[in-house]
Length: 110
Image 1 (cartoon, helix red, strand yellow):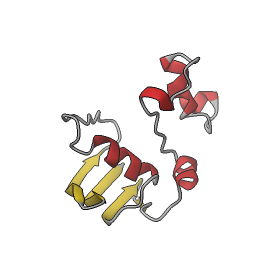
Image 2 (cartoon, helix red, strand yellow; image 1 turned 135 degrees about the vertical axis):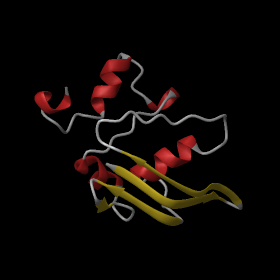
Image 3 (cartoon, rainbow, N blue to C red; image 1 turned 90 degrees about the horizontal axis):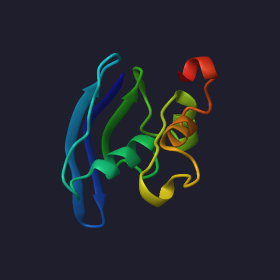
Image 4 (tube, rainbow, N blue to C red; image 1 turned 120 degrees about the vertical axis):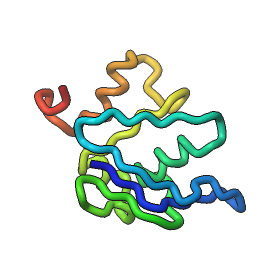
């Protein structure tokens, strides 16, 4: 389970994430929707540890991960496949998604 509690993030003087809290439970589908500029990518970057969390907490499977480095989060089973130029352009959509699961065996990834 992923649990976000009162997450705040800023870019310069702009307060992007304002006390965001939610849970994504095992077996449920959680969808992140919103218009441009409301913080979707910022949230994903915070989840991956690509930008430091200013305030609040992130838990993965009951363990706090807010202070973990990105590679430690990947090792814990969290992956992020960005859109646009940050993907591998010669791979298919499926292959790009599977790259995020590359630390798992084929049986675990499916």
